Length: 255
Length: 255
Image 1 (tube, chains in turn brown, orange):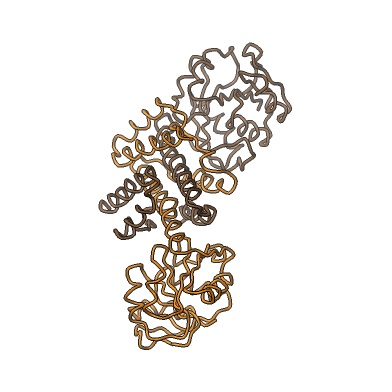
Image 2 (spheres, rainbow over the protein chains, first blue to last red):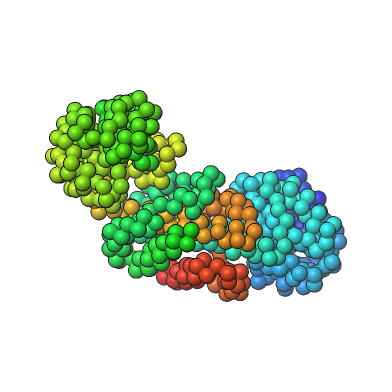
């Protein structure tokens, strides 16, 4: 299929490359600034533009890989195109695209994407479409890119997006606070890498609630007290330590 | 070296197996209950006992792989032994062992250990000893087991133990809450696995503070509001969502 990529961020890079790698042809990259669109276009051997009036109108799929806030205005300003218009956002309803065309949908990659290359085939893609035919085309396109494709309407996608914030953004924040603590206390943060990876990887085998360990679930108040003392110069982390310890104990009592 | 393992939990299994695999000889497993000690002893082809008076006294290393609270009493009740006595706890001072012998230390595995087999060579081992000679023997023993060995006194070990609780126990709790949310909302939690693993694995390349994404750091109040609505029937997770969103924004403003 011929694909036009609109956007120059991480999602645009990932989906553009993944489409090309799957044998599709990315024919054009649009960006608000030509300088931002040009590198991705060069990598994908296609043209770049910063003018919506210059957009090719006969591609099969138009991927709006731009920030959530930018989707409505971009959709409103699209020229009339033949292909399907799809956005890539978890928390944006599919219908914001109906201003652009009658055939629209969503292709939401449930992964933290970077400009650096990643294993695109293992990125879950959640697909929706304005009608059965459109959805079927987008599902086929998604399946050509990824092994993990699921259909997801607005409500399901929003739930997964919420879950992703908790399981990824919030855990990453805990990693960031831990690294800052380690740097301040001259402790080698890298020593924690095997533990962090194991904690994530064992989810393939175990339910997290069944492998919860640590002083909170043991009710080991002496260790909790020692840890809170260690965190005396780190009030933000000390506060979260208390909140999350309580939360573990609450969940444990309710099981 | 000849090793006696005291304890029958996950740490006892892991260190007993790892020692054997490294060419050491586990000669005895002690447990408060013979029925608990026997399976590990059988696996390691050695004797089991539930009587401290029956302990072999001429092994090189005695590993006290028991719960934090049990260490002082076990140390006080040990018979006089020739070898080094070492506990395996992150948050327990090394000196609690001086009641048992003059040569004592710590061998703290900074990993979430299970009874199932794991890659023991990649478990960081943090070592301390009552004197230079003892420490040197324990470091050598640790290096025969693991590629990742570091010396760590009480204060350093306690800091790492605190960091481990945040980076592992607390993140696991977020996974557990997310899975409970997904189960309640009929969302497939497994779709989040690639994202969770990527979030942990990218720490090899990136500082977590530099790859923080999501609505909190973007100040995307519209998405935060939508997520909080999705969490209306999950007050515990809704509360943590607010606390952690605030915490991300606080950290971001202070950078």
